Length: 150
Image (cartoon, rainbow, N blue to C red; front, side):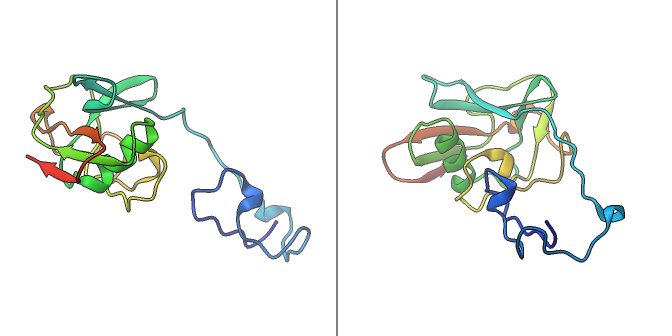
C-alpha cells in the first residue's frame, strides 16, 4: 500500500483510500509503522442511572475525568451514542454530578458530532489541562431536546 488516506472512522486499513494493491513508488526504507495505545473506555458516574453522570475516561489503566472547557452538546451526544444511551443529550458543566478524583485526562474536547467514540474527538493531549475537578463535564442522555446546562 502507498499513498494511504484514512478519515479516522474506518475499522480496517483496507477501508482507507489508496491507489491499489502493489501500486507504489516505494522501497522498504519508507515502511510505515504504528504504536497502539491502551484501550480507551468511557463511563458516566454520579448520575441517577448508567446514562447520566460525570464523564470519566480510562487511559493507561486509570479512570479520570474530562474538563468542561468547550464541552457542548455535540461532545455529550458522542458519549451517549458510545454508551448506547440514545442519540440525544444534555451537556453539563461545573461538576453537576459531583467532583471526580484522580487525573483530568481530557480538556478542550472538540467533537464534530458524528464520531462513534469520544476518543475520535480532538483535544490537546492526555492530561493537558488548566482545570480542577470543579470543572468536571457531565452528560444526561435523553430522548428529548438538546440542551447545555451550566
